Length: 99
Image (cartoon, rainbow, N blue to C red; front, side, top):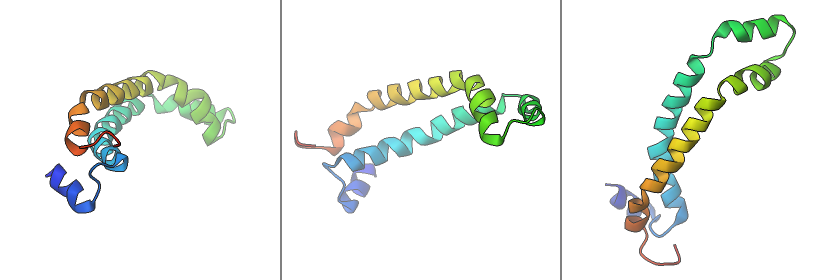
């Protein structure tokens, strides 16, 4: 089905077609992983920063992002490894060396 869909859209032998396939395969997994990681950060820490006078962007930059750094790194690592393992898609959807 992926091959026929890319063929109908004219995206065979195209880097954009491969990027589209990788995005549709990796985005749900990484989104789920990141959501579960961000949900594990206690809201009280963010509320305390807001009470101390930090704005929303400042709270995100100073409090939330450093606490979520392991989850972001894990998601990025999984995305890279899963994309690297899916070399079969690149082999299947491209037929010339130019692509």
